[in-house]
Image 1 (cartoon, rainbow, N blue to C red):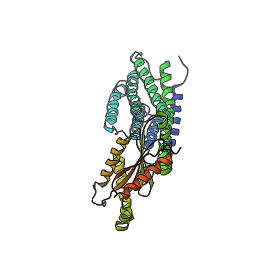
Image 2: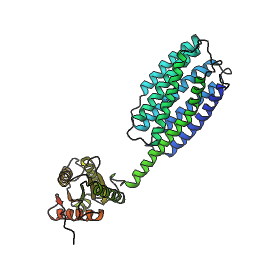
Image 3: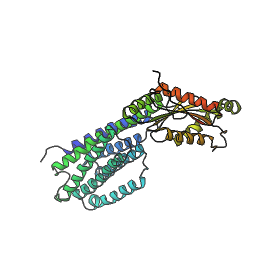
Image 4: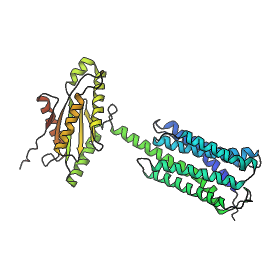
Length: 388
């Protein structure tokens, strides 16, 4: 038997809930709008804090406000946290399912709360539903595509909390029916209350770490990408190219580079204006991204000039990809985009072209050879023997 007053855990939960909701709402106002879920998680913490505040006044305010409503607020709070994870990870919100679960739970709580006072029955309902909700939260993170330390930490904390609530559910099945809120001093109850109190701040911390990681990835993306096309900026592409060359030479893997330049682009700007010229560049970059494979890297080398890195790709495959790009560029899809073509130079990593600049120079020369040969074509750079 433990002498810890359960009301202490309730007050701690209220304090932690208020703190977490304040932090989450503050982050929501400062984070980019495409990092979602912060405000919803903050609302969830607010619900939990309000529930804890009402529970702490048990015996002072009417029973419905110190028992029934707090139970529903706790479930609504955890349900909001579940929704925020779905929003954050891009999963479709299950509002109807969560609402239906809350309505069914509310109906199940009516009997042991108002008709026949049954503390054990209320514990069974609450711990059972909370186990489902915490488990569902963990499932959302488990199914997310990319997971770092923050996601792993939050995932395991959700699983641990779900395990504690399930243990509380199991012990409640075998609990004495004469047990009440005031005479339940069991160890599992104290663990259950303590877990719920501290998991509020622990899970919120985990979610904040997840949001910070998402912000870091977004800032990294913006720093390395061209704002108009989404392709790598020149400096970022060069760093990627150098790394890939080192990896290809170490693993003896083929590597190819494509240098691309839109044909007669100055004439397009002069005839249609620079706005239309920008639309042509964006149209081509979209077609280029569509043709490229998952592991390929595309950069905007300057103006209407693009560069593509094809890792683990031999000459024949690289030429086939270059031809698909050329055909895609010439295929006019939108009536508001004037027709255009592209000239492409292809170079392969070899003993004569064993560094980034040599590879780029070779692809660039091949591209200009394509221009001189009539444009709208692919030319391959021939490796020249090294001088002895």
